[in-house]
Length: 219
Image 1 (tube, rainbow, N blue to C red):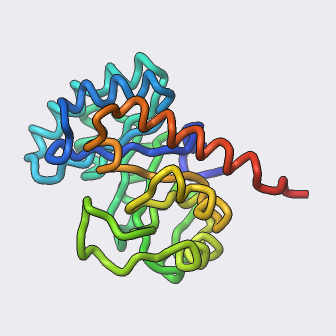
Image 2 (image 1 turned 90 degrees about the vertical axis):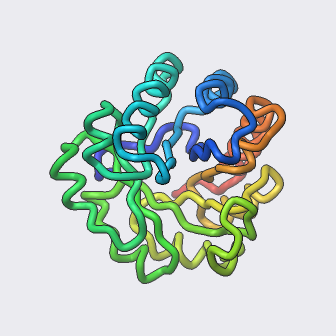
């Protein structure tokens, strides 16, 4: 893969939302990483950029201690100042500026909502896409019609980079999403609100690994 490098393995992305979190984000990231999580993104867009920077610098040592990759849903300048591995950009954003700022080794992701949008992504600039909502989600009610496996499959087929499914994803839904072409999944509220985030991550990882293992190998 071009676009700065490979997705962290396993490709389960935890997206933060402290407003839904049942405990401090530092605690959630710690137990999630201890459970095997290796990919997380800070998404706290209501915070000012200086506040995002402080939060990122507090979470980064936890990720680094576990060998996890930490990126930012936000501006590349903040990710760079915090020393993060990359950035995830909103749909419709040109990733070239982020690539120019962050350099060739950084990881850059982009949100997509339709096949045509996905098809326009440049794999020399973008390492992954996030498509959703895969299912109805409590985290973003009314965010758009749920794609379902068929809608997600159309996006994945058009996209030149790996696609993660987000929105209402549970462990039981992962096999259908992987069969539809998902390289992995992204979670927010399901982990943020969990009574035991570590156990939730373990369940999701087990489902993802099993689903990926069942997929036919390319010839």
